[in-house]
Image 1 (cartoon, each protein chain N blue to C red):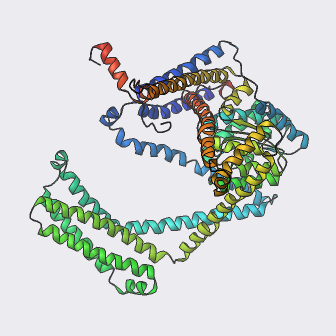
Image 2 (spheres, chains in turn blue, cyan):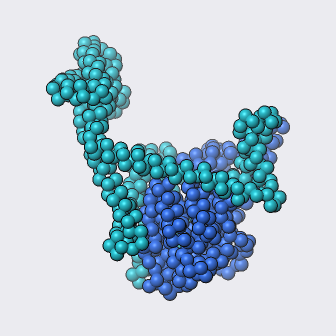
Image 3 (cartoon, helix red, strand yellow):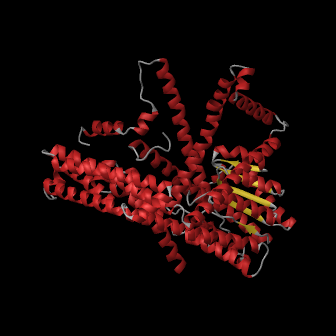
Length: 280
Length: 350
């Protein structure tokens, strides 16, 4: 059912409202100064080490957002890119950001420029380090491989959306002995990164990484809000499993499951009719 | 102050862009239909895609800037840059040439498409009382359809019976097949027109109109097929085919085939049994791989079932857990993007 809903039902609208409320509530709390705990993620802790390594070896580093287009995943990567680019600017390391999507490229370029500016190294920013390779999956992969081999990068960051080209990109870094940190939301590509990279952030850790690095109230609050939203979904799953089990043991009971309340709007219409005496 | 104004403008347009899609998702279909949004949704979505496509220019400018400067200043790898830009320009030129040829075939078959659409429209309008009142009477439209279809048949027959077409037919087998198909299609169209003229009731006339619609559609397709057969051997088309099929597709396949080698190399590194976790991973991989092949069944008949259980229960549960986390995080980030709830890192110091 997930991904197959074209229009919201009252149940979905209600869930969206609850999720939005959680996020706004926790952002407010964080802005008011409430301490929000984020567990340690070794992959994110290793970012400083990876950038420092490039300065020690005097070799460049690369940050790829993979096949990410303009959207939440790219936005999540930008926080990490900002951090990495600022560190690279401070250490005077050359940074390459190979690009797949021209739309994303403009945003990425702006982010890197801002990070150099915030490090006080605006003059060191080279727009040509944001390289558009190709909008074709494997042409992009071959361009990336060529770049990594030619420039002998010391560290690579693979953050974003990856598909079949994931292993090709990660192996290129492995071949030149680069320290590699990957973060991917596509579960089917995660094993490839685990095999090839030094550190791998799985799924939502990518979204948490920016908050972890910046410790900013908006991002920390948003992270806490989404955790509470996930708690709601966990409760739904437990209740759903409970009802399904009960119905299978006692078939005569036929209690409507969570699915009915989420995807069928009739219950809310019936409820409103009951409350307002059939005038809804 | 200017920065603040620009920032507010960007936030306003970001919000405006999101409002439409949220509205379209949340509103019931009945309301969207009554406001006329449902039928315009595809066009509006395409409009957003078109805006995004403008960014392709940025990519091309970036390529020219980076590789152009490499060539001009003879920097390291400048020969590769020449190859890249030459490839880009050739692909653009021959793609444009190919597009022009397709456009010409499209234009040449336009008369048949118009007749097909007109015939279909007559049948559809006749079923709709409201629309029927705003068009000329059915006999008038059917009479015009019969005349148009006959004219289409006559002009097409004339165009395909000259010496030039005969010469092409003798020289190219695909052209000969296309011309034969067109000739057969014209005969069928003529029969449909005769049936329309001879029909004595509206039901039979509408059935004949429906048949004309189908015949004219098929004729349009065959005319395009003929055009493609005639131009298939042209120099431009052959170069385009070579660039696309022989180079672009083959190079893509070569890159994809590298994956096989890399999977083996990565698996070798990852599957060295050093910890309990890697032992479990190795065992699971072994069961899944053996369960996939007949040898596994020969070893132990229940192995395919164990493999299926591994994939469908523990693996699916883990995949869904990752998916859930990522989806909720994406949703929350989308909300933040829509309302421009940005961190100070991205907005405050600009």
